[in-house]
Every structure is written in structure tokens, then in C-alpha cells.
Image 1: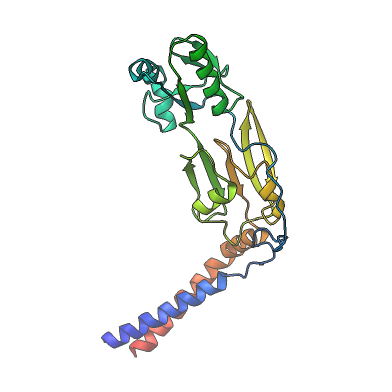
Image 2 (image 1 turned 180 degrees about the horizontal axis):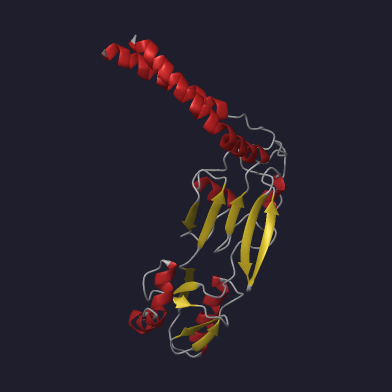
Length: 267
């Protein structure tokens, strides 16, 4: 009887494998590769503009100050406790950063209001450093500004949709896709949607990853809060529609076939 059960299970596994094969379709490889027009002697141009992102409203910034007198610098490295709710919501440690408010400003010890939106972290660090020098508060001050909420989102036809935290403050769209497991064979590499918030407005840019020009595009490097959405191909949508229509019929037929085979095996 055990041997008959093994035979029945083997038949059942074979039928299930056949059912899966019915829904598998061959995706076109025409647009399944990146940088189709790159040859061995292609010279890639420099990226237009700077990849360094600009500070925006609601960003959380970590500002670190050091000088030849560490005790004096400690005053300016106290966590900004008034931002605890914002930093907790962003995933940063409570009270660990400075919130850029709706007017694009931060509230900094001694200096008060400093405008930050629209400039880079390097520019903001230079602004704060110059204020220390002008007011002779620190000797040879060194100021570092970093994002605490640099995240990008990968959605759609990628292997592992995810929200990625970028600790290096520099990530290309190719790196982000790699961290999400790459685009599946059903994703539109020639029409990837990039959604970006900038200066209070939301823009949508379509990117062709089949084209080598993406390597010199100003959108090659992502910015905080960017959303990358990979649309499914028509074949994937059509396959899903066919599956919904055919699946009940196939399952009913397989069930009937399994019952018949089961009785034959028992006999």
C-alpha cells in the first residue's frame, strides 16, 4: 500500500508541475538587458550637474561640530530634543537631528534660525563654520552635516520591493535596483518611472535603462525620498488575465484526473 501511495504522490507532483508549465510564458529578451547601445569603444560623458542632493523641507539633519577645544564644541553637539517626534518618525534616534521646517529653516544653538532648504549639506556646513569663525566662538571649527532620513523606495516589477536606507548619502539607480534584487524579466527597463519631491512639488521622470545615456543622466543618482517604480510589461498583464480565466478550469480538470488516477493506482 505504501508503494501505491508513493506512485500516487509522484503522479500528483508531475501533474502539478505540468500545471505550472501551462502558465509559464517566454518573456521577450529584446528589452531585458541594460545599456544595449554600449560598445567596447564607447566614451561615456560626465554626469550633468552634481549628484549631491539638496536639503528639503522635513529633512532631518545631523550636525556635528569639532574644534581644537573639544569642551567648547560640546555645546553645539547637544541633540536637538525639540525634534524628537520628527526624528522618531523618520527612523532616526529620538532627538538626534535638526528638522528642516516648512519655511526651510533649522533652529541652531546660539545662531538661531539658519536657512537650509535648497542648498547641499556641504554648503550648510560651510555656512555654519563661517558663523563660528565670524563670531570667534571656536578655534578652527570643523562642521559636518549629514542626512538622517536618506531613503529611497523601489516598487513594481523588482524581485524584492523595499525601502532602502542610504548611509553613504550617494546611491545610483542601478545600485538601488541591485539592492532590490534587480528588475524581473517582466519589468519595463525602457520606461522606469522616477518620482521625486523637489521644492514642494512632485515631478515624474521616465528613464530608459536600455540606453547607455542613463550613465550620464542627472537622474542616474537618486535623492532622498525618491520613488522608483518599474511597470510590468503587457505580456505580464496578459499572463495574469489568462491565469485568472483558465486557472479554475485547469484545477477542476486536474482534480478529476487525480481522482481517476488515484483509483487506478489503488486497483
